[in-house]
Every structure is written in structure tokens, then in C-alpha cells.
Length: 117
Length: 412
Image (cartoon, rainbow over all chains, first blue to last red; front, side, top):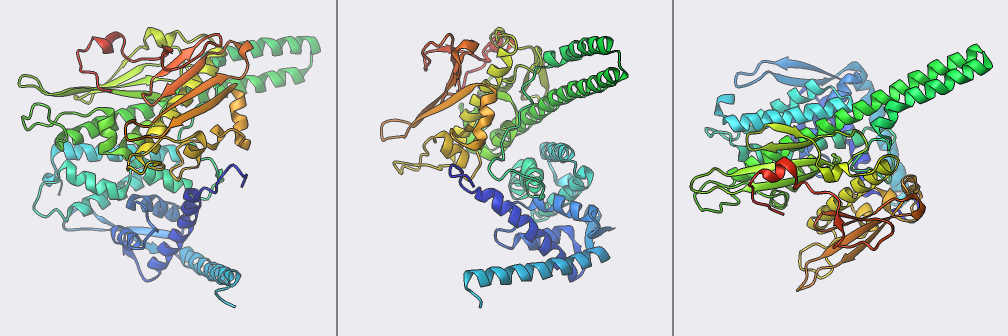
């Protein structure tokens, strides 16, 4: 980073958050299918992960387009049909790779910072 | 479900979702699916308002948690992992500095030139090159049209957002000049204080300058407002319209006033108009910087204005790093031959904070004018290297023509 430019923390956290958010989505869905609204609300409970709730939906759409998620609609007695999200076979494989990488990364960083020998 | 919604709230929701759809389409996202999911999410949120009518105030609180259309789509897009400059998420993207007129002339000039080459060389290669160049030129012309259409559409969306915000402001009765229990509409400054993020998202992506006039309600007249969007990007087309919207929600077009048309012809027009747009951007960035209290020298909780470097390096990314003198990206400024210098004065117990920014042409021989903007947002100019300041001639004002004929109260 040139001397005149400070590291753009906002961009850095955005990039980091995006990757972690994807990991959290596939981990949440590994336990079973979830209603989109409930999924967003659970993610929103994690401090610093979801800045505004609406941002999760474009990400879900993109993961679906990438073949990691699938959706189906369930009739609701009190409103529009509810969209449920579930992991595809490809999504489960990706989840394993993502978690393996995440653990490796965290362990490496811990070693670097001296938290773990 | 929807019978619990007031008509104006339903309309506000539809307007919001329309903006999301527009942003998503621009980013190449699956717009319909995102809009459908958001609608479902928002309706779910209203479940908590058991037995009550969903009002604009309810919706506003829900949308605050959901995010602005730009943040829903834009922030996600930023984080998509695609190539992104780590320094400069420029808040406003301007079209390339080439006028539509130039582009319209370009095919003819190039075509003639290439035909001459073909005749002289008599080679099929020249004809092949001619075809390629004509195709490329046609493509550039089309891109200019798309830029203009996109610019107008963004501005129209911005006007609708501001008009909706005016209705929210009125419903919240923030201002009621004649104490009749019916709220009045707010000035741009008041709307900023009421909902900075909406005003910011409605105006920052546009190369138009927004002004608002309001007429407070009286015993015999209803309150009214007139929001004007006037183009600052003048080299795209001679007849870029001034757009206005009032309390009816209808957008009307009118032609630019005589002052704006007085901008000289290309290339001076192109270079100067980009500089004017940049000064508008800087003035808006300063206002956001002050209101966000990123700097408060006398610790009175009233923010101060910032230097170009402070604006560009603030956590809110208010200005592109290319404005910082000495920055590698500053090279971009060479293209349009101007230096920008900022002078700020911090607020004191007796004085409000202030700033002025001057754009000075690097070479006097080009005949470019100097420009000036301060905390009032008014852009001024000086010719032939003359001194420039707060008393210099006003370059651009929307107080002209049909807009002036309306007997509305001027609100700064």
C-alpha cells in the first residue's frame, strides 16, 4: 500500500465478511433445510457478520446459481409461499472443502501470532 | 396480509423494490428472485405489527434493517471477490470524457480517412481495417447512448427516492410551520438530517445536482415541494434535460437554462464539465464528512470539514483516492488538466466550520476556466487566470426559466 493510502478497512472487512458469510450459510444449511427468513435472522445474530439483512439474499441467489444451494416453495397459511433453502450434493462437497481450508487458515494464523505452538 | 397496509406504504414498498430491481439488473444479478425474497422478508417483518396498520414509519424501520437498494446490491457486489481496487471504491462513476457530439462525428471522420488509405494502398487489408474501425466506432457511440440512458434512469430513481422521503418527512411532522397538525415538506438540509443514507444513495451516484424548494402549508393551501435535478455532466449531449418532481410524484423534463448552455464547445466543454462534476462530488463528500463527525477539532459534536486526503481516507470512502495530490492514482487528474486545492477552517464557538475548494487549470494556455465551490455548494468560475473566490461569477444556478416562475419559497 503506497504511503499516501491507508489500508481501506471498509473494503477489507467487506471482502472478509463475504467469504465468512458463505461459510456460515453452508454450515447452517448442513443441519437441514431452512426458511430463507429464518436463515437471515440467524445470521444477523452474529455480530459484525451481516451489516444489513437484505444483503444476504443476493448472496443466496448467487450460491444457488453456482449450484451449491437449491430452493423449494412451501405454502403458507398466512402469506406468500415460503422459500426454503437446502444444500445440494455439490454444496455439501464445497462445504467440506471450505471448512477444511478455514481450519487450516485459522491454525496457521494462530501459529503465526503465537497463540498456538 | 396486504390489506393491513396503507396505500402510501404499499407504494413506498413497491418503489423500494423497484429500485432494488434496477440495481440488481445493473449488476447482472437475478433481480426477480432477489426482489421476491426481499418482499417475503419484509412482509414477515410486518407480522410483528399484530393488529396494526402498516404505516410508512413501520416500513421505514424495517427497511433500515434490510438496507438501502444500493447497499443490498452494491455492498454485496463489492464483496463478490471480483477484481477490486483496494484504494478506490469511487462513489460516483462518470462516463468517459467524450461528448456524444464527438462520437457522432467520429465515424464519418474515420471512415473518410480509411477510404483514402484503401485507395492509396489499394489493398484489401485497408478495407478490412475500415470495417473494424467502423464497427468499433459504432460500439463506442452505442455505449455513449447507454451511459446517457443510465444516467437519466439513475437520476429519475433518485428523484423518486427523494419524493418518497419528502412524504415520510411530512408524515413524521418534523416541520409544521402553521401548527395545523399537518406536516410540511423539508429542505435538502432537513432531509439530510432526517435520513442521510437515503439522501446520499439518491444523489451520490448521479452526475446531476439536486436542489429542493418547499412551500409550507397555509390555512388555504396544501404544502408542496419541487425537487430539481440539473445536469452537471454537460458534454454527453447538448439537450440533457433538467428533471423535476413535485408532490404529485410526476417527473417532468425541461431544457437547461442559458447559463448551463454557455459552457464552451469541446474539448474545453468536456474538460470543464468533468471538473464541475468533481467539485459537486467534493461538496457532497464534505457535507457527509461533516455530518458523520469524522473530524471534530473543538469537540463540540459538530463535525468539521476535511482535507482532500481526509475525505479520501475516511472509513466511509467519501472520495476517490485519485483526488489526493501525490497519490499514484492522481495521474488520472492529468487527463483533464486540473489541480484541486482545498482550504478548511474548523468550527469555533463563534464560527461555523467552512471550506472552499478551487480547481485550477494546470496550463493557462489551454484557456480553461478556474472553478470554486464552498460549503454553500454553489459553483463559481473565473476566466483568463483571474482571482477566484466567493464573490466570483456563479456558474450554475437552477433559479432560471420555468423553475423560477414557480412562486415557491427558497430554502437553502
